[in-house]
Length: 350
Image (cartoon, rainbow, N blue to C red):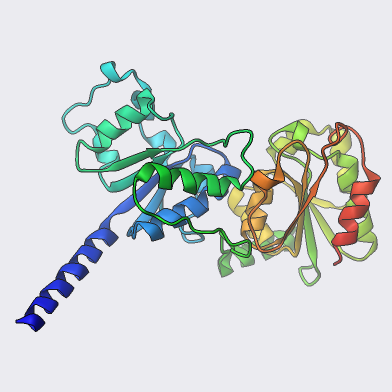
């Protein structure tokens, strides 16, 4: 009889485990690529701690499209494909119809973490109502920005918020500095090599990619610093390539772009997938506090990140080979700094 009971207990346990693995989680992340990369530890934590069968991310396709197959994210949902604006309505005015598309949009998820709305907001209340129309679901609203006095990494902040609001006895996962959050495929590397061949770069040497821009102009180290570093590296036989995206093209004059091209080759207007492929072939990366810097770090590239007004303790890129160079001076974005150039070059021994 005891053996029979043990078998039944084992079957129940396996059945419960299978049911948990069929559950899925969803993260609503409306931010750009840097925010999406910084959300990956939370996604991994949810997936492992809650034993979810998969986790999706709802965001802007141009940013989240690179994640499935390369990260812990299993699927993506386009933020533009859903009528999310309806959920921002005042709670008293919020209505759902029979077979409402919003109900089916959230019907697959047992756990939903959202960076949209705020705690106790109309959005949160309406999202809870929507998710629970089809089944029992847990909705947790997270702050995207930590308080000013916060002194840990923002990824820890996300996980801690989730634990506190879940009400479950979960243990926070310590984020390991050596973790690669994003893994490039062989196809990515081959595409990156093809991009380099198209501009006549020999992949046989050590390639250093420099991106001199960022979303905020105050976070951008003065361009002459990057040019000086590129020139010094080039004089030592290092292959340097400037990566210029929309932010750089909008901010830099034709004269500045011409100056960049006089120092090293450049690639412009690549898609995010192409940028990822290119970075998968790089030995090193130098950039500001930007989304592409976070992407390079997540890929395991050797990253030299220059921080000005933002706090590197909170927003340091996560990866196995990241070095931070911080400058709190008011001239960070306005004037060259030979001292910081030298400091970076002394560390970046290629």
